[in-house]
Length: 271
Image (tube, rainbow, N blue to C red; front, side):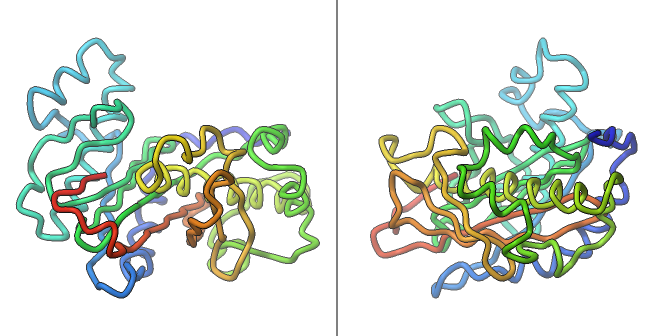
């Protein structure tokens, strides 16, 4: 039986993520340098509010819980930008024209994720980063999810015959999930694989043209490697990303950053 999600304010996860911040922010952005910054927020913070009219309109008509989730993500993004010293760190963050990606201030790229009342975001300078993806998963996934997330070959990774991978054995933290040891290990691997594909999906959306973008997580191929995963879009196998994976107070955090190549050096790129 899948354990019920824990009901808490996310403080433990936030503390664990803050402890992981140096690891995340040490991620290399290719050979050109540049800094990756991490921002955090929770939906229970009393001071959450829109930063401008566009965010206000996006919150209008939403259930209070959904509005707070949205605002916590924007606050997390602004905190990541502020850590980088970006001059637009206080600006509101609406959506891009596609209605999917947040529209960050000119000269920056970013990504965000929400799970169980906790929002985590990454930001980086567009001059050094072409694609960015982050994902946080606090709650267990049903085993049936494997069929809609993983290919038949990838489902073999759940058995553990390939050994521990991703963040499972490296920075395990408090990841106990209940049930038998085998079931708990299988769920951890499934959650890592799912989260790695989610991070890659976000990064690939900005890296690839529409015909090559994956439309589902099955459109992304994943393979465990030391410290995380090697992932690629099945429609564009030449685009390979390394997705980092770590555990934090029973939640899995994954992230990936693609450095800028000569062909990517476009002014004012946002993500």
